[in-house]
Length: 256
Image (cartoon, rainbow, N blue to C red; front, side):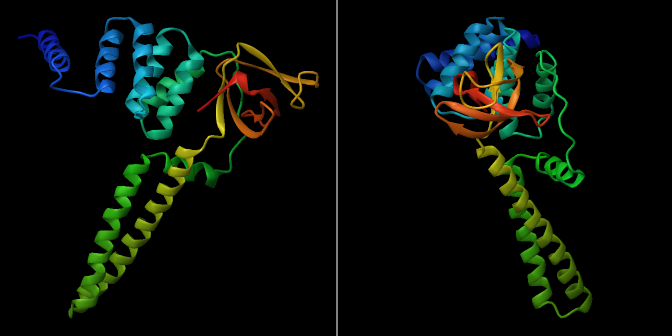
């Protein structure tokens, strides 16, 4: 049997299990149907079905990544960037997400040069983004268990060489475990942060204050990522990558 036939048979079996109620929650049903729609090139249908999964409160980098891909295929680059960014928050080390996000950002009008970041801050953020929050947490727990085990060796062993190994190796692993927990906490804060958004207005002028009659400062376009600084009466104070600050109506933005 060819690989294509095997895939078709597998999907038919899954659909049969779903239709007979032997498998699956509604979100799993929608997810499988969305995947099928995407594979058939029905990207609008796929996006709608993935959104139904999201409406159930389900979160996963795969779901958000697939939504991003669907919107990208529909040339809705702001939508693609939004969902790629949401996927990246959950799985910051995923290279496919980073690559597709970069491609989508190259499709939008604004090419904003970011402010240079302090080297130690850049290094720290790069380390935090190597793995997901769960991966850092698990590594921290594993390292802590080994550190405690080596500490026990130090306490109970009578051989000097084993006591030295237990002491030094245990302390090194303890430090690594604490660093893992620190990276876990930093990743968790980034995951729960709601201070970033994507512009969803084709072209909009950033104002000097939360008022339509205030001074025009600069223009941003659909798909641009902004940082949210403040919120007053349906307006957000925003900051773009080059450091420029101003105000936009909340209706023009979608939080990441």
